[in-house]
Length: 87
Image (cartoon, rainbow, N blue to C red; front, side, top):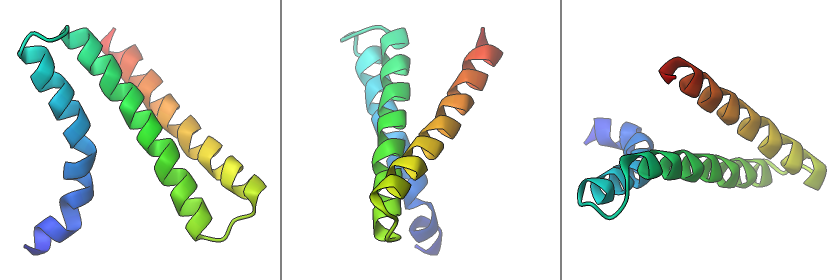
């Protein structure tokens, strides 16, 4: 139970990608679509969490935007590295 309390965020983060891949396996759409959708959902989740975290930290409105942009930028760099490695 202690491990679950520390790892629930990882499990939750993997859930959308798992569902998308399962739907692709069921033949509802291609695996390529599922992977692209998973990336898009991950970036959107990153934006939402960054805004939430910055708002809870009492950042100014400009600070919230800057924090969300920075976190999203880092996420997009990671995606670009993944794409570069796998192509």
